[in-house]
Length: 175
Image 1 (cartoon, rainbow, N blue to C red):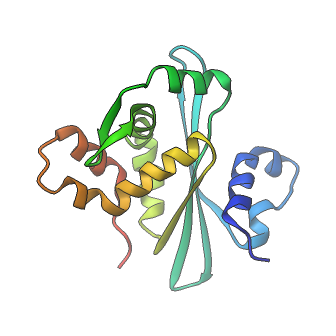
Image 2 (cartoon, rainbow, N blue to C red):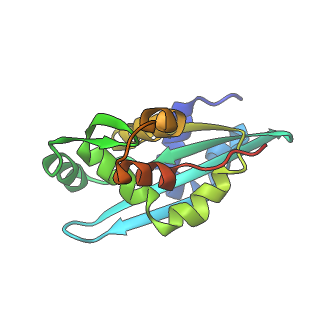
């Protein structure tokens, strides 16, 4: 059985239900949950941001991983994201980025759980694929741009914030 990334994102979005009902979900296609973080923000309305890393060790010499970003929790989460973020900003050396997306990803990657759980997991991966739906998809686009082109985009930049965003997101791949 070969799963699509859409199937994996569905399983990530329904992970709690699948686990509690003992449905195998992504495990049927060889993926295992490897790292998890949940960042909560109770500032105005409840907001939680979940990030999963899955691993597939079918080839013992080449680990494939998937990082999955949760989409909007509910309408209030989405409205806070859209209403509070209308001006484009810079992130990881790229300008014209939606400030709501960059703020959300920055909060995730500057959280100690990201540094202590997600980065060590990613450092064991030879290949990383990013999945997400809705806001999670936007986070994936920005995450992937920064991981793949961050240094190139930052070349010659003196923006401390953009370098800080890059440094907090990036990891060292295995040799």
